[in-house]
Structure formats: structure tokens, C-alpha cells
Length: 436
Image 1 (cartoon, rainbow, N blue to C red):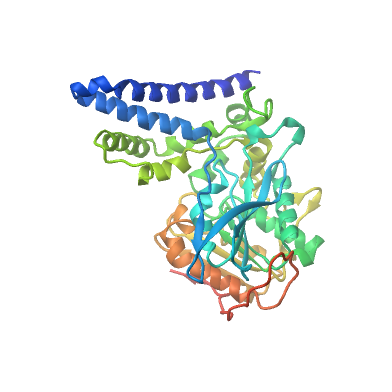
Image 2: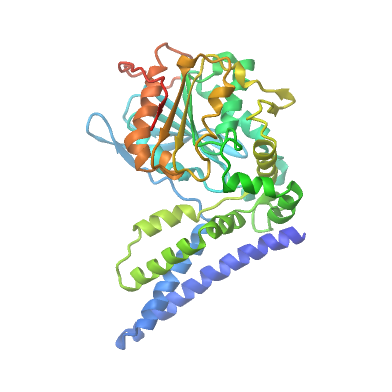
């Protein structure tokens, strides 16, 4: 019960700060105070506005906010988010573009389960929609999942991915971003053994810790310094009575956020002070760069305790994927069983979370895959976020990924078709290694 108490204590602290911000904003904005303008009251109102918004966003799942895209016909097409597969810990969703024939490129974007919602990939989805049918793994907040739904660890995550791939058929291209890269690789290898016809056409791994020890970072060093007992004692709590998942063991989103913020506390503190100053001068807006970034950054979700602990122990500490010793449901997965799925790795030269060398290590594990189906790319000057959502992604990486998809899409394949197939564009040769 003490862990449930600490969970509720964190929520109480968050709720109190949200209330304090709202109260300060309301009091300092009282109309009669405008008779004698006071800079202190203006600053107080600005502090209240920023504080209320900050602490409110911590428990709100962001909306995708992708209402329409411009098609090849020059018209705007509405975008609807549809649930294809509904599961307790995560859904498979599809961004359906109304009035448009089904695109030839079909992409499954595997979102991380690492503290933030799948909406962290919003700009990635938006950039792919004009050229692809986009499907995304939409993971649920563990605090909202009843204990009766059972556990969810790295093996369950891998099995979910396999089910999603089977549902979409083999005429599919998978893109895994960051944390899910090792498990997506394992899921593809397991499909190669159990159900070869369900394998995707290609697999693109972006900034993922396939071999965390290849290039150590602060993240991997933390996994080495702290024991599993220490992690379980300090990071794991029980969901409080306020939510449907009451009693479930989780790594709380608020605790994760405090860890994120502490890594760059001075920079975040200055960003909020600057925003308060802008609000007090009337220079801020609802969707200015600060709010656009922090509305997403502050929106955190609880992770199932067993998923977090098994990720640290099996992926980082024991290196089961890197050593090709990963076991799913009692079966040892052989990554070398992948013989036909083209695999491309993408890394950022300035990635301080999954440093260069960690992701490209996947290619050495693919002993059964011809070199002609392997590719890699190292993006210069790009950090972790930039390789899947920033300028580097838009201008350099995205075109390379689309070329890679086209180069491995020649033959027809099985798929669950609901719309007519669009004529295929001319293929490009893109299975090559590039680095700068």
C-alpha cells in the first residue's frame, strides 16, 4: 500500500500545482486590478497561466491533430483515425484518408512504449501520409488497464507486433522508431520461423538499441550502474484508486517525467522562465513553439512494471537481442532466420540516447540475409529526435526510406485489401549503405 500512497501523493502534488496556477491566473486577472496596472500582477497572471497549462498536460493524452492532407489531385482530404485491432495494452490504428484510393506503400509505424504516447510520432505520420497508407501501434496508458488484463512484458510486446503484422498481410513495410527496434527485429525473425508468408517486405530500424554496449551512453550506463532490485524498489509503484488500473504495478509517467527533466533541468527551467516573460508581455500564443513542444513532452503515460523491468534486464543488461539469445514464449528466436526481409538501419551522428553503432549492429545479426538486402544510413549533425521527426528526417531520411520501400516492393503479396490498389510507381534501387 505504501507504493499506492506514493502514486497518489505524486498525483496530489500535480493536482495542487495545477490548482495554484489556475488560482493565481484568476486572482491576478481580476478586472478591477486593471485600474492601476501592476507589473507584479501581470507576472503573477503569466506564471499562473504557464503553471496551470504545464501540470494539466501531464495527465492528458494529446490528440493526433491531423485533420487533412493535400492529395496528388490538389484537393484537401480529411483524415480519420480508425482502430483496426483493439487489444488491452495497445491498438493498431489506421490513418484513413477519405476520398483517396489505397496507396501502394503500406507502412506500419511502430511507436515507442517509453513514457510518451504514440502521438510523439505525429510529425512522422504527417510526413508519410501523402505517400503511404500509415498504420501505427497506439500503446495504452497502463494506469487505465485493469489488473484483470494480466501482465505485459517484452515477450507480450513482441507477440503483439507479430499479430499486427499478420493482420496487415505481407505487403507491408515496417518502420520501428527507437525503443521498439530490438523487439520489432525479434518479431520479424519469429514470423520468419513460424509464419514466413506473414513477413513484411522491409524493415527500417531508426535509432534503436539493438546492441546497447556497442556505443555506451548515459542511458546504457545507468542500466549497468543500477541493480534490478534498486529499480524495482525506487521506480515501481501501484496505481491509485482514481484510475481503472488500481493496484497495477507501473513505472509512473510522472516519475519518468521527473527523470527526463532532471537530465536538463537548467535548460528546461530557463525555457519556462522565458515563456512566463513572453506571456506577461503578451507575446505568447496557444500554439507557439514552447507550447507546441511541451504540450507533447509533458504528456506522459505509465508503463507496465514488467515491461519496463524486462526491457532493462533483458535488452540492456543481458543483451539478449545483441547476443541472439532472445526467448519468446519458451522459444529461442533466431534472428538469422530472416532471409527475405530487406533491413535498413538509420542512426544520428549526434544521438546521445541511442548512439551510432547501437542500431547498425542489427545487420551483423542477419546472417541469413544477403548483403544486397541490407542497408544503413548515418545522418550527420542529427540527434535522436531529428532522425524521425526533425528537419533531418523530412529533408534527408524520409526520401531514403521511401526509396528503400520502393526498391523492395516489386512482386505482389498477400494483404487484407479493402480498397482498389493504386498503380505502382517505377522502382528505385536503394539497398545500399550510406554514411557521412
